[in-house]
Image (tube, rainbow, N blue to C red; front, side):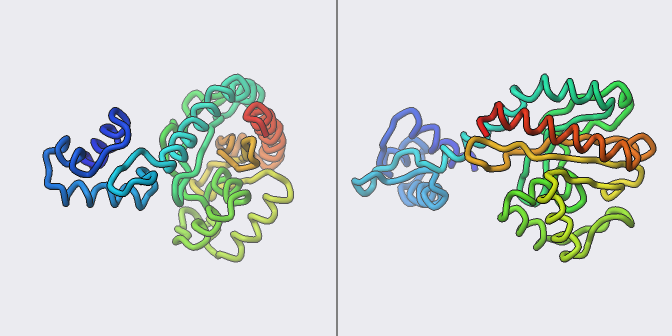
Length: 241
């Protein structure tokens, strides 16, 4: 892994380079450098522009950089909207993004009622058991397939573990634009989410509101869902959707 990163850094500094140049920089045999470059080329992180044996950084890095840039833009642009939402509802507000077959929270704002609530920053949660996971699956077919094909772990008695039931739930989310998780990840925890879209119509992440079920009861949960949808639309507009 370290050597692969060294290769990328070398090409970033020196531009198009041959296998021998890379091998010399890494102080490894030419065959080792060739294997490293081949592995990176398979992931489109490096490419051979024309002359065989010469390599440069590939377009796969653009995809990675765009992903990071999008996440940074989301958190920067969404912050004031998250604060307004947290102030209005009084519960914890998060932004979650997909990461394989889980979601990960990349930003969090706490409302006035959630002073002692759980810190969700950086936490990874199953797609099928979270409102953010459901709403992201609703607008990303590849993510939906990954979520449905994975083991639907039982977290509570309310967790959806039947694949057809999950697909039916996703259809409901698509119809309304709002996802709910009613004590499906943890007993006593309810949540609702809506997707953030980019300029190309792709779901980049989700805004979620979560809180204890006794405060986010059915009436308040549904009201929070509508507020989350309105907030997500504002952020989506800022992202160029």
